[in-house]
Length: 91
Image (cartoon, rainbow, N blue to C red; front, side, top):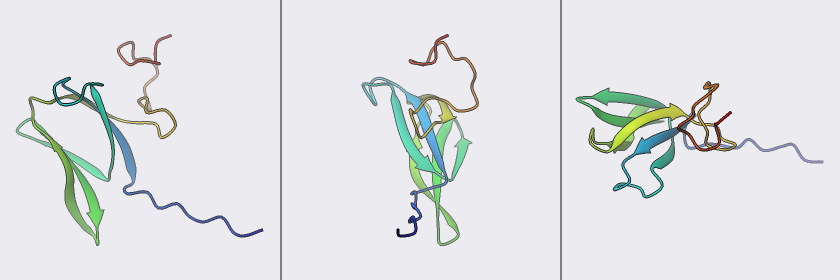
């Protein structure tokens, strides 16, 4: 039996971003990123490459409502026990 191969993800963390319906009809976008930053209301995600942080996705302040660490299994927020507004998280 061969050794299992390491899976290389594009970044360390998986994020969910609640966005306007004009930007995405489903109202959420999921992405991988290593870091986040909010400046002047704009949300930017960064990926590390060769030790440098490079922007990999950005949302203007008009287009995002919330962001969270998302589960790789189902996209639901991690570290949240209850969230009535998120489909699948109701009691």
